[in-house]
Length: 375
Image (cartoon, rainbow, N blue to C red; front, side, top):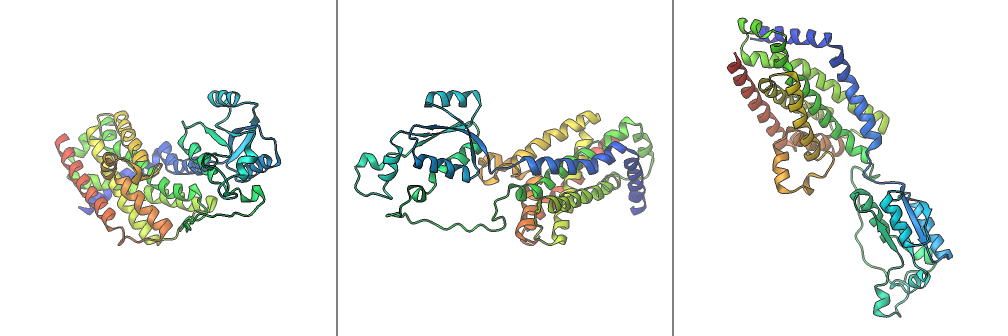
């Protein structure tokens, strides 16, 4: 048995080494995607182009403008004489929001409940200004909304008379709130999903297209042996890609690897095997390599959108969470982030590890049975 598996392994390895395009993709895909996602994706919006309508023209309004700029969340790129002109600029896309400071802004500031208790009920609810925001982009809108809670005691240059009790927030694991820290481990799962399924989904199809299936039928190799022999070379490819992404992510973006490397390797192997067996199942369904590629894309898109890579898993509807639970990448996404960022171990992640193991076993059985039918 092992001799036959080894023979298939050597055959697949030689075929892979002769395919320069695939060999180049093994290294280039992780590097290119790491650069793109690492530098481009940032959920903490910075330097948002906004406008200003300042009808107050006082030292306090200038102080508010400088305080907003100091947050680095916004850049005032234009000034407008009226709200109507600013709204037109938002519609055209020149700016994403506008800060409106009314002519009586200073009076509103000094009659705020924190500074003066001698005011009427209508004055209590009177804002000192207004943000008008393009809500079509929820990330930008959330960043602008956060500015409404800026403290104004320093701007008013007087002590706060009345304070409101609040909660202290202590942030573990990523106190600097850098998006790339969360992106890089998740990128391992996304790239492995794409490459492992893509490479193996064309495995059986390639044998058919090249006319090698008749030769395999005449050999004593059993379906399960053929499946194992074909996926082992790509296990090595997957480990290489994990190493590239995590090492380059640590070197370029200073992403910490807090967990055990053995736990990281174990979780990666479980997911690699699960993805490879899924690719083998697809290869027994597709008739051409084009169909195999299309099926890979069909699985890749939900894997990116539903696994928690781009959007929080817990914020998705229940129906979407059920679909996500059926995807191997969802379980590996939890595992690699927990191990790399929170120093968890495989024992704490046993539920996800068991699911990946069962998925691999079921995938191997289905792929072997379907291959047997094609014989």
